[in-house]
Length: 114
Length: 114
Image (cartoon, each protein chain N blue to C red):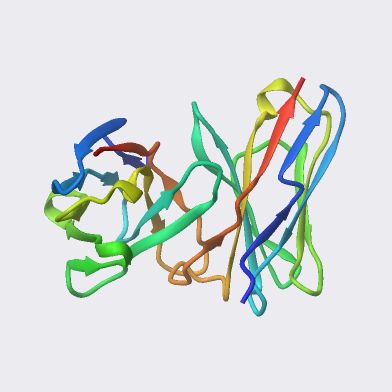
């Protein structure tokens, strides 16, 4: 079956703009998590959604938000973009919410801020 | 504070040689432990996981890892490395339960000489 699909793969924005990233999980998976990956900070957890509700949140400012739809697809929005938001944003899906549910990752969206 | 340390930023091995990637963690409760691999331009793939039971776990692609509670370590091993194993390897720790929040190491970059 199809894996986790993230769109777009690449995105270039300027400071102050906003951006929306999309993630389609594996069919049947109900949990979607988002991560930011940068060379300096590594992988950092943004948030997790399950059944259209945010269940867990990392330490990111309110400019970072997300939502999940009834078909489990998820979007992540970043407003008032800053240079430091340049990163690879990864989405991961799993069957359920528990820590024992392996996460399957998409190939990411690479966001560059000019 | 909870943390994961991968002491080796970069490792180079010859094809056919054995490999050990180190991972140390600091975690208050019994952790769930994971190893992921990331090839250039791609997302992360789960190699193996440890939840409980046998401390030596087998994963995909011929990898194994050993959980040593006394040393707070979860080192990844492979007896004979293939050129296709060149990639970035990440160790991660999570709590048990539904409040999943993966904490990641900064990764070890593996190069394989022919």
